[in-house]
Length: 194
Ligand code: 5GP
Image (tube, rainbow, N blue to C red; front, side, top):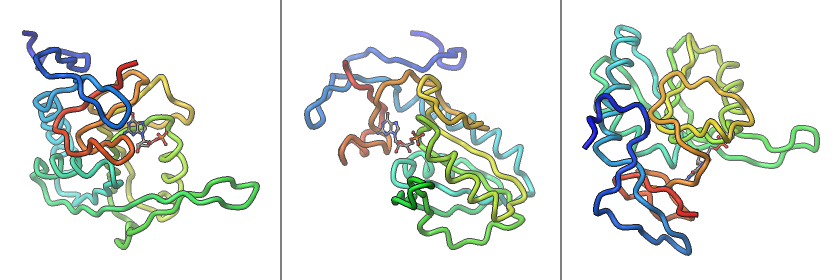
């Protein structure tokens, strides 16, 4: 058994956990609940140090980030606020293509230290469209915390300031992430079996 604290790569656990079937696809265990919690502890420690006295505003992007946001926010020991938004994509004019709007952002972010909580950054499209809208509202600072990042899938480069795991470009589910509505309630993260 490797020591989780010294391990740099995602923890691929190959214990007795079975392959699971969700809808028409098979998924194998990939990140254990313990490794996720350990990573969250590390991220929270950094955030607590970096934002002490700044009363940051966390903005969690639903649905996928609800579990990560909840576990992370429990470990934030400094004064901080959190709100939850949903991003909706609709077809704009021909030239603008799809436009992303935030539903539920009822807190004024002007002059605030804002930290976006995202479950997974895949192509980077969602955040690359949403971040300029937030910056337009003149926060004091704007940083990203993401549990997962697929570097090989990047189309729109995004700077992730606080990252859990870099993972391969394979579909994952569990820990808030779904496959066609199912799988969000799994404590671990599973990866699609080819
Ligand atoms: P992006 O705009 O970066 O391409 O995609 C971000 C969103 O796509 C995530 O917030 C998530 O909802 C969804 N997504 C991307 N990759 C995966 C994945 O492997 N599993 C699941 N369940 N959702 C994903």
